[in-house]
Every structure is written in C-alpha cells, then in structure tokens.
Image 1: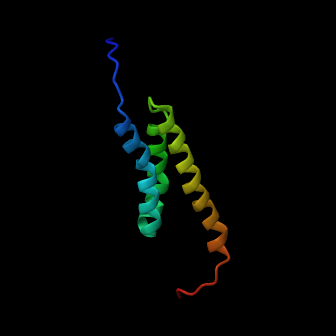
Image 2: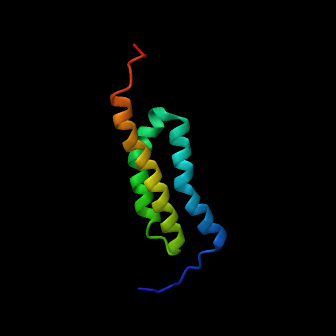
Length: 87
C-alpha cells in the first residue's frame, strides 16, 4: 500500500466547508421536495465532510448540521399545530 500524502489547500477546504451551507440554503428556499431530499442527502454529506483532513471543515459542517436539523425538528411541532389554510 502506497502512503502518498495529499495536500489540502485553504481554498479547497473553504469550498468544502461551504457545501453543507449551500445545501441548507437551497433546502430552505425550495422547501418541497428539496427540504425532504436534503434531510437524507445531508446525512451522507455530513458523513463525508466530518472526517475531512482539515479539522475546521469538520467543525463547520457539524455547526451547519445543527442548524439544519434544528430547523427541521422545530418545524414538526410548528406545522402540527398550524391552522389548516391550504384546503
């Protein structure tokens, strides 16, 4: 097995850290069906980016995950008790 180190540039790490935030923004702007699809796809993106060689990328991905899933969890009781106006 060859041990070939790979250098991660700052610009690459910054773009990678922004990936989850872009998914969050897209899911909030286009709620149906992107919000639902990003709920599952975000788990995959989180798993890939959390173990990035640059620890700050993993940290910022974790914070973005808290924001998105906190919003998604907060919408459940809000929409449960919201008045039905779309019938």
